[in-house]
Amino acid sequence: MRIGYVVATATPFEFVATLDPEKPISLYDYVVVDHVEYDPGRGEHVSARLLGQIVKLYRDPYSAKRDLPLYSVIRDVSENILEVQIAVVKVLGYAEGGELRQPKQPPRIGASVYLAEDADVEELFRVENGLCVGRLASRDVEICLDLNGVKRHIAVIAATGSGKTWFSVVLIEELLKKGAKIVVIDPHGEYVPIRDSIHRLGPYTARVVKVAEHHVGDLMYKIGVLDSDPEALANAAGVPPGAKKIRYAIYLAWSYAKKVKKAVGRPVGLAFLRRVLYTAMRGEGALNKLFQQYRLEGDFPMSDLKQLASKDRHAVFSALTYLKRLQRLGVFAPRSTPLAKMLGDITIVNLAGVNEEVQDYVVAHLVNRLFQARVRHVRGLRGVKLPWPVVLFVEEAHRFAPPKSLRKTRSYEALSRVASEGRKFGAYLVAITQRPSKVDPDIISQCQSQVIMRIVNPRDQEAVRESSELLAQEFLENLPGLDVGEAVVLGPLVRLPVVLKVRDRVLEYGGGDIDLAEAWRVDKTADVAQLWRRLYNSAPGPGVMLSAARLKVVQKLREGGRIKVKLLEGDREVEVVVEDGRPTCSVCGAGRPCHHVYKALEEVVEVL
Ligand SMILES: Nc1ncnc2c1ncn2[C@@H]1O[C@H](COP(=O)(O)OP(=O)(O)OP(=O)(O)O)[C@@H](O)[C@H]1O
Image (cartoon, rainbow, N blue to C red):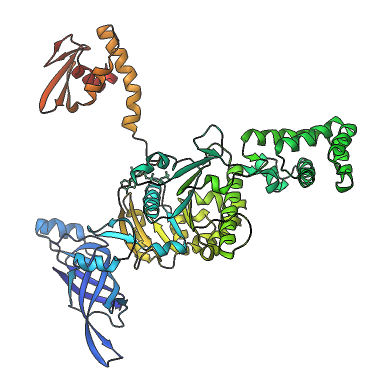
């Protein structure tokens, strides 16, 4: 279908077209232009069909100059105003030998512009074995992402509530279908409901690993106390950075525990560290007894501990308190949770319920272990190995990988290693964030594919622009105008930048918007029950409430002191009139406690 003509060109990669104003054309849709390209190889002109995408679309009054008093022009010509529809089209290239080639000459002025056929567009985005996450925003063509693009890491960036978690869940579904192994770092436990809905997708195993005892999870993530260093323990316990003596006490207890581990051949936990400090508090004699028990005298600077205990009892006491707090978290144990025990097809690491310091610590520990296990597998080294590549989804990536200049986190080191070296070892990153300006630019720019959804904050737009050479200015300008669930996808995941609408998901997640009407209804139930009791001297039964839930409210009218509520029960219309606080049902009569009345009371309870 011809929709317009080329009217101006600036470069071979962009042209302006005037389009038929009557034609329903959408931003981001695809067009085709007849074109003649000089082929230096053959020494002749060849015809080609240039494929382009509409990146700007607007209407203008015909021949109106910017400085014309538009208001009076429009008023005078009223409805007969002549408008033109203008499109700025980005040239994507022309197909030759299965490749998309870039033209060296711009299209001719006056060349016809056609709406691309669905088949042309499908061909443009066809990939083998793709991850089918949605459809084009501008037309009903399925879009599948290139599975191999995952190897170059992905950043999912969007303002809060724009659909990043939804998209991530859809991507998880597609990856699971391809047999991928996934680990999700989930600071709020949003992904936990995936476990209970995974059967809808197929026979996959989903495990939830928790960090706080009282949160949802199949098993606790434990960090071996002696696998960590004492500084890290102190940080996780919340010891202030300047509290040098407390940190020193923890260091001494930890160092001693490490020696004991070596001597007795089994690891020890926080309880042992506390025992060491507690013994130190009791005095030199008690310490000597403890040291004798393990016969480490020659091997350990006991005098340091003794000195600290005699001079800085307060510091030792505080260290004990901090370690007690840490122990209460339940994250630290003599041994770390074995990877083999916690990994399923998808493993959700539910970090809810612990402070950011501990979250950071757990993420660093886990990511390092996953990465090392992959390195050992690929290099054939001794130790725990992970035999399959793993995709690591990191929600709220800005928490774990903030810019180095701003704050240094432990997980930053681990994540940056995955971002820079993960490709070689089969550890791939999907970094999800609503604050790209708060993620370290090195990590974001290692994510060569980007899924960008609605972004309004100019600083975040700027961060996106800086991290993505592929994001053309037009797309950047249009980011605030994207609808919820729409995304621009760029990089190795797609052959060309594409704007898509993310498909429905099968798996559940728990961080979606709260349905306020639904949530507030809960309170209404109590109010209606109270009203019902006043009217009928009994509580509404479950049968009445269930039948009421099936009714639909079609109208609510207020006439003076009367309120009429029209309901639909199947095809039948029922009217309930509430006058002076007393309901009368058109089917069941006055004074009868029926489900029609219950439904009507739900609608009017707040004004009675
Ligand atoms: N592809 C989609 N199709 C339909 N609705 C969607 C889609 N994506 C998002 N939504 C709607 O938008 C809401 C918010 O989406 P989502 O939970 O993914 O936001 P988010 O960007 O992860 O927000 P937050 O940063 O607060 O976690 C969803 O509850 C859903 O109602």
